[in-house]
Amino acid sequence: MKTVIFSSVLLVSILLFSVTATAEQAAEEWQNTTITDATIKKIQESKYEYKKCVGEQMQKPAYLKMDSRNATDEIIKYCEPVLSKIREVYLAEKVPGVIADRHLRQIRMQITRNALQGLMFEQAARKAGQP
Image (cartoon, rainbow, N blue to C red; front, side, top):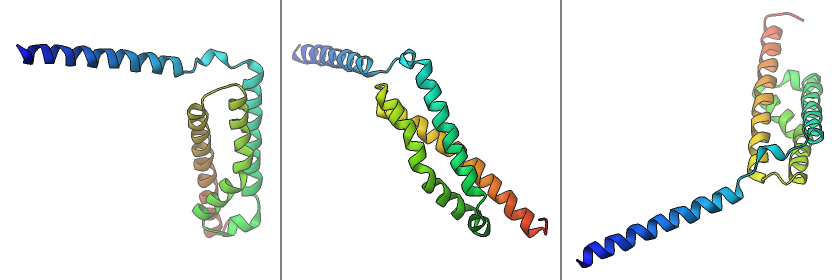
């Protein structure tokens, strides 16, 4: 009898805890409809500036002579302050840092892949004797 009562109390406690945890998570969730068109435009402009920074750095002769992976790493590090402007825009709109960081990581990975691919192509073309 005591075991049945203890099991019931334990089950009720677990259910109450899970409901409380779910309610806290719902309160912390960010609603994606709160970003205005002006904010989206700022984010797109900052992303363009980041792409522009990476593209300009890729054109520098010093990077074209380096190993493509090392050059890509240095270019991404150099342009990181430009990317951080997007995070500032997100935080000004009260977007949780986790979501902002996730989007920044996605942008960084995409641009890094493109830069690495471009530098590898340039390096291969140089080795093949093309100008």
